[in-house]
Length: 435
Image (cartoon, rainbow, N blue to C red; front, side, top):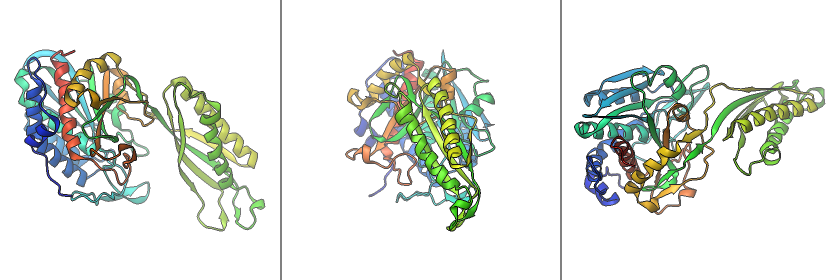
């Protein structure tokens, strides 16, 4: 495959020109998006090739801050460790909004064969790991850099104020640290200007390029992480009866936890997920260890259901361990992500903008998503809209594409330019009072 940066002419041909609207028109938005398209792709490739883990996004934040300063915007750095913000004041009075992008990568070794493939390695939880933008945050950063340049170019025509938020650690702060949206808020991301609406987006492999996905109300799940420590008694592998095997007990706990959702919770209205993703125990084939640690995640859409399942996790683990002669301790980590809640009125107001960009048949009402996003913290405070942008190449089965967080996660680059146009359209239409 030959890699080329889409030109403004190619983008116009691919997505068409927008229809005219008052003040800044759809055609003007399309033209401005075309002018920054090549830059957006170039920035994305650069960030992709130099990924950084949560709370370590120093190179990325400098790239962002330098760009915003060149645009003539007042820039604030160092929020929540590496966060960057800037404020654009339009030439006319109007509303205040915020646009957010996340910057961090994941401890994943890239397997996608592209010229800008990441070969970065680092240490994570005591192990050497690859680092990859396997969730698409590189495209989010480049996208918002492009939107900022677009809005600055039409500053005098725009009413209102825009706060640009480049946020670290969406994937979660390293152990023992704080980070992400909650820390951005704690450290005063809205102290300079208080928006009346916040907009954000996420690229996804589950939709093809040129397709946008949304949902009004609850959209993405609340997430909790937890650790279960199972204490047994060490013995020789040939004499299991002389000790208490925490591996067997922990295995039974893993299976028992699955019955919480499948047999104990009414999931006919709202789903829930309990997953154990990490299981640590033992050092040698013929030694039964004295301890096992398991790490898991809980996904819910309702506060009462969340509280109920948390109690059941503790009850299930403790009682199964006790039945085997072991002991289990369940610890839920602080800093869970709330449910991403899209404001119903804001969603309806933005729909015409999304449909103008993509066309009615390419704007999809999505089901509940059990993935989580710390954008939820902004939505808890301020009416917000978070939507999805497809990045699987047209003609490919998006349901079969490698998912976000996969080492094979692949972004169809025209989808990034499409995201720039979509976010800019939503923002400009809101500022101009389009309904």
